[in-house]
Image 1: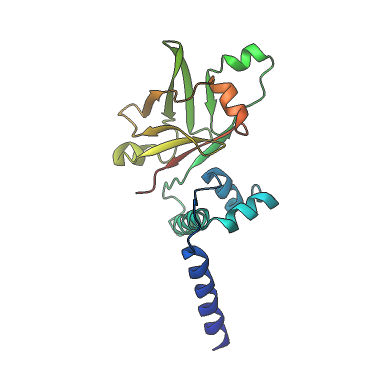
Image 2: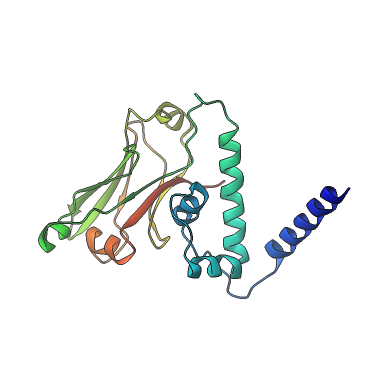
Length: 194
């Protein structure tokens, strides 16, 4: 009986935390940061924990990501489930090399971002590796995908074409390398929640 009461109390606390409106609330942490915390690959810093607890919207997103990971963990081991990939801008040897960034690859090697100069700006192309265990499913289902930078801004959003690519104009005024350096050098490719 006591554990049932504890469970009910925990659900009530969760409900209160998630439903409290906060004026001007917005997502305070990028999905890549929240996923890394869920994976245990990078704990949240004290400031990130404070941002999470102060933002019901971010807390709801954290809960949704946690539930998605639980559901993915309950799939069969050979089921090609993909919930996101992340990567980092690696240090360039010179400043001029950093300005001429050609591509970034996710840590799992399944996604590549290509940057092509175009009309004084850049074109960004997201490419899926044919070797990715979930490639056939993503090409078949055509889910909406997005690439976000380390600050949570959307770099690219769309659906893969038959070649496993999605292409858009680079949406920022700064060059790709400089932009990623400004936002922690990280990026993530993730499905867009319906």
